[in-house]
Length: 351
Image (cartoon, rainbow, N blue to C red; front, side):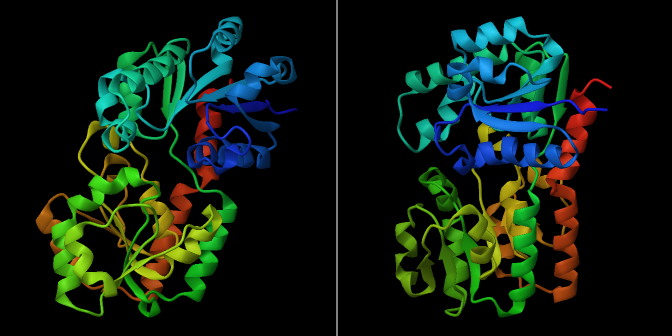
């Protein structure tokens, strides 16, 4: 019996190379790959391409629209489809105008609140056309249920693809934690994390001051606080690397830092900053947003206060290499894309 086909449509600005959009990679490509392995014909495209050539994509059984934005073409398509065949998928609180001021666009890129609100309103307008939703975190699912008429709303966590998991396992084997050259590493990705690094400025300064052999690697465009300039000999700025080279870079460090400001926008974020690093054998010291707090692991130190950060940054790793490896394997099993799509099939495909 032929299995249902699924098309993932992402509203991404990277029209020519959507795979390089981390959000699209996790919510579309990773899931499509795992569904394909189960026998489902799948494909991924962008909303711009989908709207320009709708006839090409007319014969799929199910459509997943990732972060859809309201357009006349999208509305026409959705209204003509049976509601059970279309799903709106979200992995950020980018559909709530109420929280526009908390978005990175406003907080760190100084974009106009009115302009950002209009963009969020377009996504909210698209979401209002759907009755079935998937989301990467529980807080997102709660917001969707509050704002829209959801007949079905399921939390499908971000899932790691087998390639990334395999690379991570390889770098763990080649880089024992005890021999890694850096004590701490921070992977902000974008300058929108400037306030997050500033949040742990004091605990980080105390840690660097406590021992000159402590080294910090920063890989990303974040601004280093002025108070840390005196520790320039201990801080290394790493070059940007492609996504599948990230495990190799992470495996240079014992700990990975994951501070996040306490905003509703951040509370809805995925815990991928934890599990990407944990798969490389790193112990993560981070803010326990809900999608990170669901994990209990020796590879995770949850910090809810400045004192927690000070204590976590100074405490050595007391577990053996074998215990750390077992913990990494446990996280790998929990966050595999295969596990997430099994739930997606159960929730959204008519049996």
